[in-house]
Amino acid sequence: FAEDGTMIGTVGIARDVTREYEYRKQILKLLQTDALTGVANRRYFQEYVERQRGTQKLTIICFDLDHFKQVNDTHGHQTGDAALMAMGDALRRLFPEGFSARLGGDEFVTAFIGPYAVEQLEEQLRDFIDRLKKFFSSQKSFSEISVSAGAAWTEDPSSSLEVVMHHADLALYKAKKQGRSCYCLYHPSLG
Image 1 (spheres, helix red, strand yellow):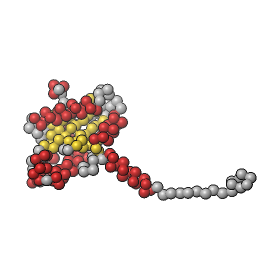
Image 2: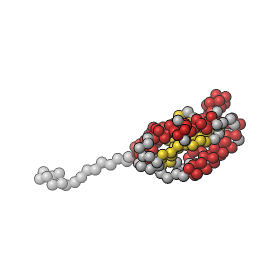
Image 3: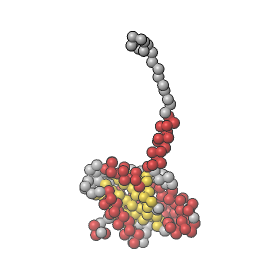
Image 4: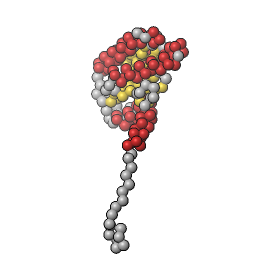
């Protein structure tokens, strides 16, 4: 500014924030993603579903790798990790319209927000379980692994995510009791 207060020039300072922006994206991805499988982690899954759901129908599928502990103990953690990565990849490919996450260990979940027909759900579950069974049986170290699934849904917006996940989990355990490598749909008689 001049002595009389008029502006005679400007000084600007610019800084390239491209690198910081990329770091921020990487940090955010690390906070939201299971590092091993590439699907969402439990915390982000819950946040995402709660934020996106609104008053829409919510369908939850819980998955579990059958005999995973035996394979992990027998063939080592690298083999177990490879099975978990294959599961994450299969969830992304075969349920592209769903939002999938690893809950921990060998437990996974997929959510569908909005209209989702039971017939479509059953067809996709059969296809998913069959494809993974073929994949795992084709690999000697994975040959004992299969996938069980349980599904539940609600159209009631007041029904919490935790309740629907619990119902899907009850259906999953019924599928495991029925012999594994299959799925079960929740019914109130399950508990």
